[in-house]
Image (cartoon, rainbow, N blue to C red):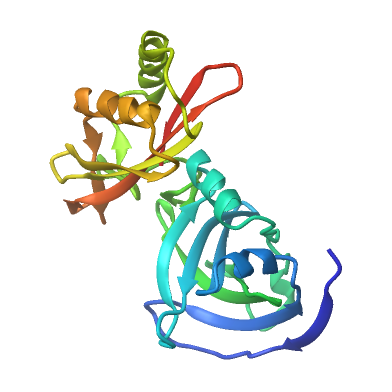
Length: 279
């Protein structure tokens, strides 16, 4: 990708807010129209914002313009989930997700690392004709368990380590609801059922379903979210409903649980095997 540098705008500032510990930041804007096709297909699309984890695009926020008002957040995609990767490729063909730009703390010589750690966060905004990289630097205070800053890691919350959960005072925190049963077990059962369903008309081999995980872990409001309805999609919905799936509900700050929408991705592969995964 060839990009022409439009301008490099540095907006350095200091902040004494203990809540955010924000130290400095700046913005870099680059001319780039490589994702314009996705904007052509979605005239109401204003911009996409990308967050990174381990140097890779991990979360995409979609903002759309409605009635000339301020752009509204419409949908979030988590790139560690196969269903969201499929949806992004389907909805926004040609979208090129930039890798995380690299910048070292030495660019800010006044920031000293003593009993704190300075870290940077990068968010990239994708517009029809440009990329805007927003760099923010923070100070992170150490505690006996490590760093106090929470961050996104593989779609889950983590503290000072990689993994799916935070373990603190024997409490498990989930950013997304999680199935209590191993999805691979359900995948095998679904494949066994599929053998009994055949021959069966399949209008779309890749399907995304949504549903709500209630505070008690039950699963409700299941419906087809992406893909063409067919006898195949109807049978999959019937299969999921009959299993009365039990989930770990989403936990907020480890204090209380909330009802939360989640996604299920079902794909009939070229080898006639079905894959089953959840957000």
